Length: 188
Length: 188
Image (cartoon, rainbow over all chains, first blue to last red; front, side):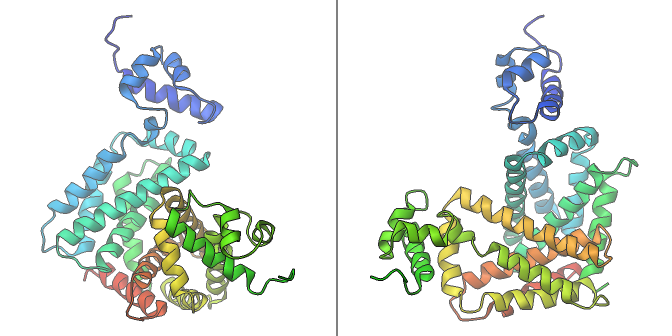
């Protein structure tokens, strides 16, 4: 095999998810992932800093989508409408990733350390959104609440999408969750 | 000093908070806390399983207040009204604990492990609330969203109360946060 490995990152990702689900995250090593993917350990570490990054390597890009989209909505938009537009962009970010998201979620659900890491990721997203809203002139507590509410909608809609085998899109689930939040807050 | 130690728990709690803030949570041992409180290490372990429990020992009681109050609201109440009643009971739970909450928060903010533990506590509260709503016949995603929204209001209102030296009550801050959430969701 040559030094250039076609789709090495995708192969490592799939091998990692398979092993995490077969043996558990704790019991899997980077060397085993590389071997399963037919690649060297060195290639693994060219793509990922550690075995956890296979699951969380996209967090920064996701935060960027959240923040950039929110920052790009018109200043005149109500925070809830800005959040709705942001969630549409986030849904596009996950296009074609349903199967990855489903497998990833089952690994995370099975491991307390990974569940904590996921909570930290969501808290970091919320803090980034609140900061973006403050820079738009939204004051606290409204900025923090809009951010927390946006992440709550993302979390609930995302989990339902991951568990949905019926083919409804993430955008659909996020819109439904946002609609439910509006109804709830209106006392419905 | 006799075997019965007056207010041992309160003295240990204050000694722990003082040491955590002076030296950092990591650098403090149970023995040092006991010594600062003028008590034995054995007394410390009669009251707390470990030094982290000084900060999180109330979590279960708090979850009980959340769940019992929510379960006790009339089935006919809209989820948002049931949540408002629940937050009033939660505010009563923290009566007289502003100084403790303030000191505790500064310790938690300074330590990544404790911040994660706090996120786990809030996620557990949210899951308990969602379960309670489901038992009342609220379906998903509404149950999960109402729970997440309730915890968002609690988190934001609580943080503002902790940072508020003006003497406004927790109940006040929670009502304000809930009102802001209603405004936001209405597109305000």
